[in-house]
Length: 348
Ligand code: NCD
Image (cartoon, rainbow, N blue to C red):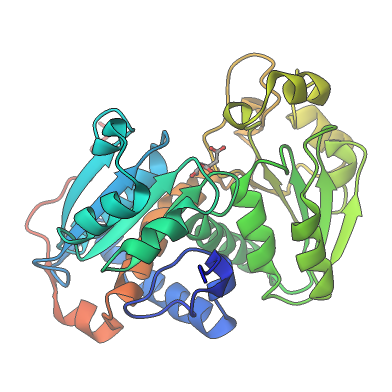
């Protein structure tokens, strides 16, 4: 019988990463520790060759900027090489090739694969036919485990700076909670912490799926529904805002969601007395007029963490490769040497 993503064995060396349900607190600790170890490599101040000779197969069948480039940069910075294909047009899927044939073929050319595809469950299908570990970089409205890991890592760092911990935190999650896979993965991953209160706001028709709600509540966490983003952020430690996933919905759903204007802006944060709140977003932010997303007028606020998230994405994705490919922190250190160039920007 075919396994669903959460039925795959725990993530580790030689294992796929398809769902956050494959992670436990010990593995989180290991990934976050490796993310610290690779910090100077991510920053480009030292050079690493631990993945010398390894090839990443990067397959993106949906638009992507930061996920694809950060996975690929992560692999390159660790000394590996990358082969890539983007979109359906330039792959043999345009000729009717199945997921399993494509996966078996590309996995024969790679040591690890990263896959993004518009259908929920499709990356698990890739994994079943692959002869190397497969990392899910987003499967439709399903999951996006590497994003949840970098989100949690950022949240933990930002709360830590304020003398707080993720345990006991109150987190507002606002926007498209139905189709946003980053929300689904993050909420499930946060259940590994203790005593989380989620304050949710979504427009009509874009509510959180009941299975995610049940998953969170069954593990002893609290969900509070708010009538507006302003109400959701009041009293919260952090807010996680998301884009309306227009590409995943019918015209009918989009009309009933009635999404115009701003999802969250500075005036709303001021009204909620939350101008100091940690502000997160998986990005991309839809910055067009009336897109119902996070307004750019919050960009000067002290808690803006959206670019800490993107920077952390590189470290976390390096850590994921290291775990999947069985490399220890010591192996990384032994394969590191000083960089002979310096590309620090000279502002003068
Ligand atoms: C998200 C995604 O693709 O799910 N982006 C990302 O990977 N950082 C969110 C989105 O597209 O809105």
